[in-house]
Image (cartoon, rainbow, N blue to C red):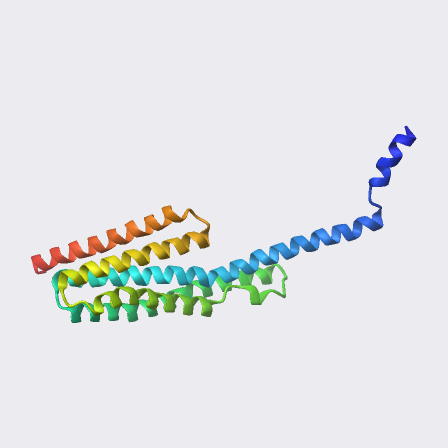
Length: 214
């Protein structure tokens, strides 16, 4: 029995050998956690950028479609879009700043309660998220504006705006799916159908209100 147990015992690490192995495993786990934490930090402004661009695209396009339902002139439609771009970009930037700064304060307070004195630089940056959200909203808003800017005919202008916005919605839906590791086709179609619904409802209700002359 002693001879049979000897090979098995030889395979067991000694206490001196086990310490480096344990240290390496702990170090590997810490590095993995740090990578996940860093990815979440970087993803903060990416999420803000994608959401901002989608909001800018959809809200500005819907606003232009609503005005276009009662005003056929290209100038008023474009001016409405520009006003929506400026107001929406500032609104998104300020809202994202307040939201992320609140998250920053909560996580910082938790770190202080846990006695952690390092890692503050890894917390979400409200300035980065704010700038990403506002800039992305403006970029998204430019899509329907550029689509309407060079079309004189009323019906052709409406068709072009819907077409370019639909393409952009598919693109933004695909980007969001990639970042969220979701099914791309399903996500893109969900964003596209939601965008069509928003534009149709805004167009229809504004036209109805225009006819009633409230």
